[in-house]
Image 1 (cartoon, rainbow, N blue to C red):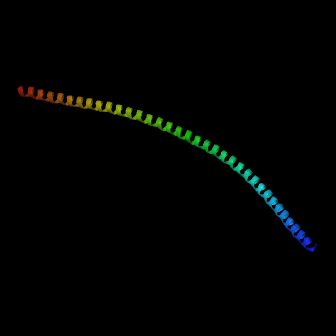
Image 2: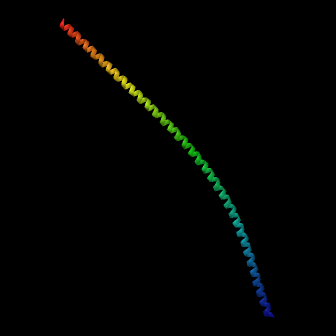
Image 3: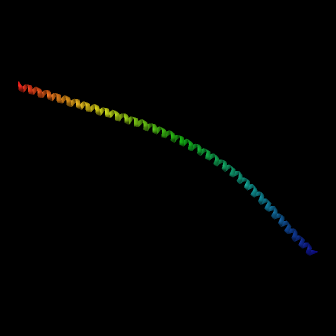
Length: 128
C-alpha cells in the first residue's frame, strides 16, 4: 500500500512536471508567434518603404534625365549657332580678302598707270 502510494506520488509528480513543461512550451509558442507577427509587420513596413524609395528614386532619375536632355538640346543649339557664326565669319573674311585683293590690284594698276604716264611724259620731254 505504501509502495503504491509512493508510486502514485511519483507518477503525479511526473504528471505535474509534464504539464508544467506543456505550459512552458505553450508560453514559448505564444511568444514566438507574437515575435513572428511583429517581424511580419516590420517586414511589411520595410517593403512599403522600399517601394516608396524606388518610386522616389525613379522620379529623381527621370528628372535628372529630363534636365540632361534639356542641357544637351541647349548645347546642340549653341553649337549650331556657333557653326552659323563661323560660316558667316568665313564668308565675310573671304569677301574682305577679295575686296583687299581688288583694292591691291586697283592700287597696282594706278601705280602702273602713273609710272606709264611718267615714262611717256619723260619720253615726250626727251623727244622735244
